[in-house]
Length: 95
Image 1 (cartoon, rainbow, N blue to C red):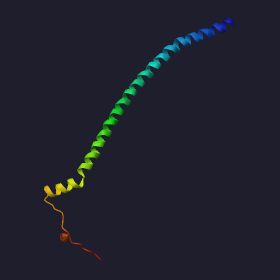
Image 2: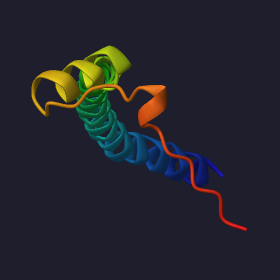
Image 3: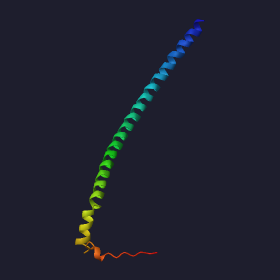
Image 4: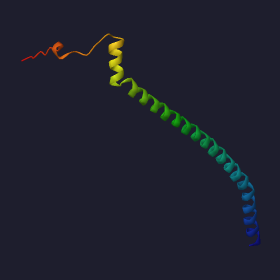
């Protein structure tokens, strides 16, 4: 009976000697992986902020470029166009 008890104690001791370094190595691996993922997340969040700001700027540019005042100014000054008078408008009716 005493021999079985000593064998169990040796098994527990040897298992502890093997498992503790393995668990420590696994913990170090997980800590490294966590730090890498945290760094990648910070980069992605910064990129998201950059893209949102760029999107806001583009929306603002679209609003500015598509304003009717700007289009009318370009039509008159650069293309030599003018607003049609009501007597210049011809309506064609097709039956």
